[in-house]
Image (cartoon, rainbow over all chains, first blue to last red; front, side, top):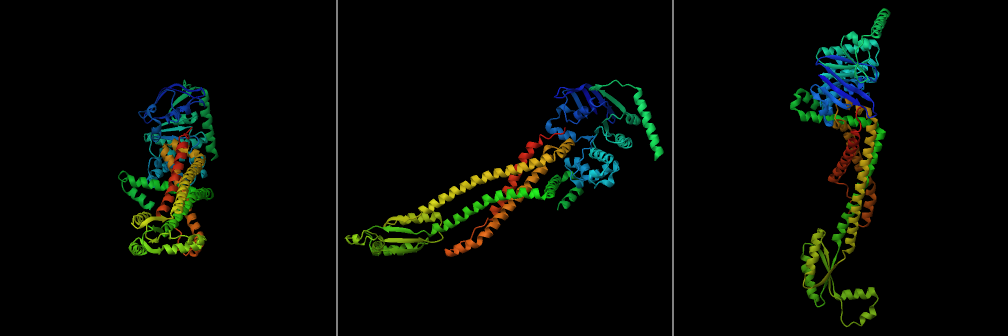
Length: 242
Length: 321
């Protein structure tokens, strides 16, 4: 579904964000791209979203080579992909409903025509009762769920997410990941950039570690296991407290 | 109406009703733009005010010219022709000619000034009385003063002039049209000057609206980035700004009409008094429906041009980062 072939990306400043990265995400897969900040996760997602173009190599999404997507075709291309952002990127001057309806309105539906799909999407992130509220009145986790509802409202085959749990505490993160998991179960291909390794391992999804703009050698090292144990201990303690 | 349309569109399969869906989308965008403007009533009103005054200026000047033309047109027909007859035309022939000419439909009345009357008048007015006594014959011809009927147009006046000149008894015809022609020439110059001024003011309106839209775009930069990020095309992002420009232009156009109307209302009484003094029944001409539509449409057009230029220019620069 997503095929990255020998992709390099050099930014005008001269720094190499990606250095010959190749990877393949199968249709219906849910994959995490991990790595430290600066490893190239965000750059990879930017190339898939056509916010940037690769310096070399191919990015092929659902059979479409992004090289062949002209500037004028970018909007239509982006409409096929659901995108979730760390900072939600909601529009705060309009209610939740309008935020979620936006991709459908862009695609040419009126609000009325979009209503059923918008409510279905909000229902999937359990925010149906908040459709009239302004995003500002919602918690960070709820805002992220609105962002997710917006990403899936037009039923894209591919969903990419850049650090979707970056601003959330572990419980909310797990909640968001479960929502992603449910989409994955109905056939959506997901590519998620995250550094929350413990959380990813809990989900049991494939991990693609990046380092310095290329695939990193997976190291089953202790720090991860330690972190996992610590997290489990924390959750145990939380359970005690509540 | 929008509700009705969109519920229809919802009931019918969408593909079969693309036009109504399109209309509803545009209607919604237009209303949303209006609501957005109404959220900043002061700033919006200021912009509308500037556009309104700017449009009202050429509209008012146009009215001044139009009224001046109407007045001078009535002068044109009030002109008398002086038909000087040949010296050898006898008084009887002159009298007969008066009867013939006054039969004409385009002639209101004909007065005969006989050579003797003319000489007597000249003697009285010129002060050359003594000198004239030495003349053995009266050098002055008989003269017909022809007053054209009020129904004459510029063309029929010209025709009348020509036909009077072609009378065998006529020596020459004098019409004191020169000053009217000068007046018309001045009006023509003024009209053109106003057209040039109107063009400059139109450019100013485009700049004003363009600048307002540019600021609006800058304020909504983040929103534009986000909508582009989730697949909005340039034209989708541009549309609300075009409607904002349209509303500014329409508001300005309507305000200009109101200003002109109020100006006329304020002038009506003194003008009536003045024309009463001239015992004329001149009524001030207001903007007719066509002119009013042109002004409103000009406002809308300039609003669209200004916002389109600003939006197109800045839209491409705002890309998601």
